Length: 331
Image 1 (cartoon, helix red, strand yellow):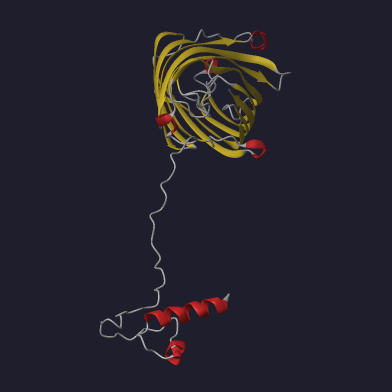
Image 2: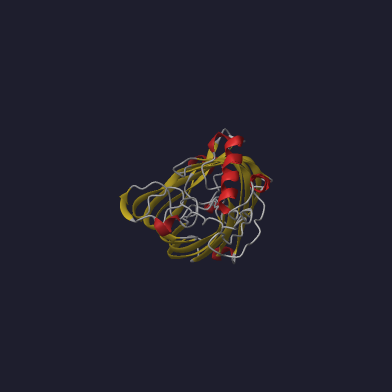
């Protein structure tokens, strides 16, 4: 192949050299040499040949970033809205450290005066109808939910006797788009002293604590896994110690993407202020490990610290400080 290239170069040199050039001049003409200029005429041609210059690198602009499709806050920009019955996921998620949020939960805690107690939540919150996207992890649109729970306390020092039980039922209407979420809700809450407790303490006075309240709440997703929230509630029907106004606020760090078997850490803080306590209340801190499924269901286990007025409203004016272990499950 090299020989063919040399023969072609010699033929090209012979063609472009002036007529009458000797074979030695032709042989001495290198393929990459510059041919001397000659005066144009019938017997000659004017040619200037230069070796090919190396190609220069061209800087191309970076490729455009693809439009995020999930996980992010931009999924609601592109996914069409539709009507759905019993949709997966919640547009406005329950507060992780909220003491009265309906869910399945079990906390084994030690209170400095009461000893070991068992605080339980038997309930949950589900979507009834949605007009919005079908994303289960961060849906957008309008959604009507139903919530309900029984919240008993058992005394582990007295054969797990029931001390009291709070009951809550509610209907939240929620809306969310992008990082902002809103909730307008009604809930009924009532508290009941247990028979076992009244038999052990015959002088105990039962309160008919009742709240029928309207709630306005809002939350902001600071990042995919970090949420800030606050809400105000006004009760239009109250009894036996309850007063109209209450406020909640807090922060949840909880990875939103499905975790698989490995799980991920979480941290949650909630503050609850109530008018009947001169706008004092309680503070809850939770931390531990969580597992989230592809439909948004969330299982957590970890430590809980509670300080402030009691979250059993039969004893709403009693001070409690509790520390222990717990598990929680949210639909």
